[in-house]
Image 1: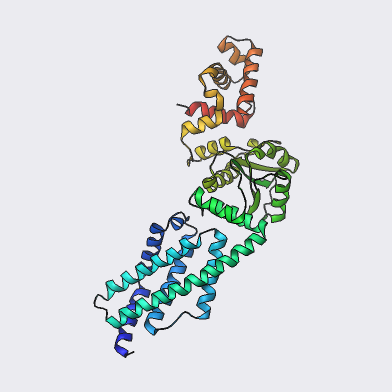
Image 2: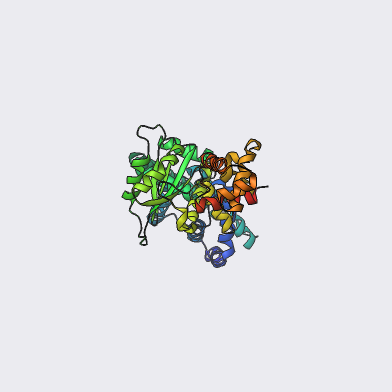
Length: 392
């Protein structure tokens, strides 16, 4: 190779490495063209940018020097592949991301060297084809090895799956089903996402053993669907069959824990369910927690509404809290609830409605039975009051 083409390539390399817009263009293209990457949350994009920056620098160096990927490069690629396999990103999607990046790299070089010499163009093509071929082989091998490791350690595989669901790394139920099939598991649908923590001022990071111990109590032995547990800081996060929500209050109460159980979100919205539950535990007043009871979807949505960042429309929040009371046939119960909240006592509400006080108290008991909310409890009365106020 003569010094002139080397100098031309080196000039292009230096210009591209120094321009942050090149990495930004690669990340943007991958984000737009590969659905799995489009679903990544903001916390994962710095990692994508870092890999893009490293890949850009290495490929341009190989182009300038007519070099080949080194053992250290292959080790890094295998490490990236193992991480992506654990994340649940399909190998086909990851390899497509690298092909998209290679296309952007080629376009950026063409824009900076429109009259690229034939030898330089051939060298670029040869380098990219060789690198992509090596990359595909290394990553496919690493994926297979990681899948085998995860299959051998089922508990760890389920924990990693739950971690990814919480982080929102699955774009669709289809992608989640594919990963579940590879692990040979069936996730609960409907499910309960329970976020729980011990009651007390001290909040050290929770040990995984504490979360798995709670899982053992709440999971149904022999159930065909799987349950899993992980930790987030001082809290346990459990993915359980939907029916487990009914037992959660008693189990947590016996352990002096409190929690929030979300049951109304789909499997592709576990991240939303986790955010709702975690925010509810962060913001709920002390009197919202009662022994034998956990916060629910309705409590979480009311708290989100009060915090100014509702995750649901007001009419949906009202339906979550009021439940059957929104039916026309329960109008007399809605009237009793309104009178009780406005008047402040059962006796005063009975006088407003021209009812016997016992009749009014019976209606309050019916409201409790239908909504699982006792109008006499300060927190539950507040949620009922908010719901009937914002109800269309």
